[in-house]
Amino acid sequence: MFVVMAVTASEAEINGVKSHILAEGLTPFDHLGSERAVIAVVGEVGPKKTQLMNRLAALPGVESVTPISRPFKLTSREFHPEDTVIRVLDAIIGDGSLTTMAGPCSVESRDQLFETADAVAAAGATVLRGGAFKPRTSPYSFQGLGVEALRYLAEARERTGLPVITEVMEPNQVDIVQEYADILQIGTRNMQNYSLLTAVGRVQRPVMLKRGYGATVEEWLMAAEYIVSSGNPNVILCERGIRTFETYTRNTLDIAAVPLLHHLTHLPVIVDPSHATGKRWLVKPLAMAAIAVGADGVMVEVHPNPEEALSDAEQQLTLAEFRSLMDEIRPIHAQVRHVHGDPVLSSAALRVGEVSKH
Ligand code: PEP
Ligand code: MN
Image 1 (cartoon, protein in one colour):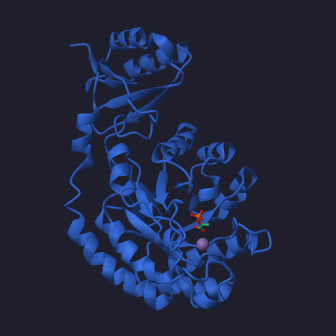
Image 2 (image 1 turned 60 degrees about the vertical axis):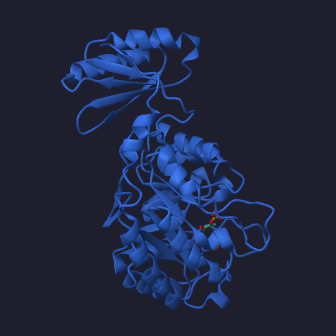
Image 3 (image 1 turned 60 degrees about the horizontal axis):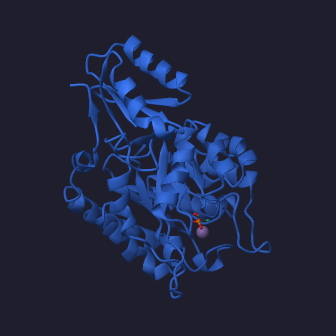
């Protein structure tokens, strides 16, 4: 449930509600909107929910108390109707602008990274990607350059001005990765690694949570809820395809997940057509589709010489192919911005069962 404070509520009244929630053995999370404060009540409320709602509704400064109908709370649009906007260096993610994360699957050398970084920056990418610690299906495949790659990524940021995103695979890597990277990526294989989710929830860097390849949208949002409820509100969701019976593509891109997520959550949504398809020639059409259905952006793998890549050789774009992808998605983005309307308005329909004082 969440408590909507009156526009005129004082700080003391807001603190009074928070203390009451703590005294009930629950955790308050406040969201200070432009007009008023809203406080989510998180924890095991149990069968006495109605009594608790009535008690909270009677406190001074409270306007109304509303149940959150979904299992995810802090990530739901019901609690937080406005879009979450994440700022990292000059990149703004989730404000309606086009985010393009691009770079190699793996950082293989300083030269390979710099050549790619310069080219994607010149083509208009807003975030540089590159794997340092690689989660490979086979223990015999290239596992990434580790900390050496993190250093190259930091140098590439200096060179291009682009913020960098890279994957963190274990809780004990969070400190070192956040020292070098601007956005922490959680890969598909770790979406339900709860100790890792909690660990990235305790730091300040934004986190991009990729969808587990066998996860439902609800499981994915519950995973995001772990991060936000651990204290980090800056979460980006990345649809990267799920495993189905289809074998021509590496995964199946769940394109419907994009508008669905915009309906269910305030978090920004990015689509990764590279891992979704596993095929270079399918990346551009699916990136176009992603932008057309309202994704906040795409993440694309790019390599100066894909055939020689040490990982995901078949799906990485050449530098020229990335430029051409940018040329195609820009006008689509400009065209569809107004089509997707204002999710804040449609979220009003979600507000059911409100308990009001008046
Ligand atoms: C990646 O983006 O580098 C990656 C390994 O992707 P995923 O976790 O989606 O397979
Ligand atoms: Mn890859």
